[in-house]
Length: 239
Image (cartoon, rainbow, N blue to C red; front, side):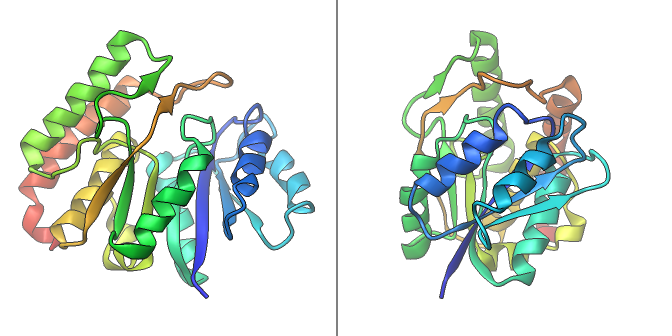
């Protein structure tokens, strides 16, 4: 049986976590959910623990001892998934910027002709709701910058709504993943592409969070800017 796991990293997502978990399970897909919580002081993990009685054997929690970045949280989740024989593994935000309804078509593509599927804001124009124009321009031109430096044929390389076939994650040395913010998203896609896996994009509408606080920072932006150059220079190491 081919199993599917949705990994949702959290830090202070008490306003969103219950609703997003319910919405994921309401899709009716045969899947499990793993919440990777970075020791949220607001009690996010307690909400997940309460929900685990409702979704027995489908909802899991990994509580990390410190907040060390999105990339580290996902690597923790990937290792957890690979130990348990999941065939399809997704990254997904807790704040409803990624619509759970898009999981079905993205999973369908993974099961057929795609190794890595990107929920893309830019593959069909610019599909972003409730972002200030400055943020839209930053994100869009960052994607163009990544394409220019890496030549990777992905319109939305910083996207965080991503599905992987198991083989993709098995091929990447997870302990050597270098970055933690947007650069992490670029790094995983780039390494998969260098290894000749088939990448594809599925158009989504990205909706900025209504509840909770964004984790964006200037350090994350700088990491992405310099990280792309690092990835290009070290291209041959990733083959």
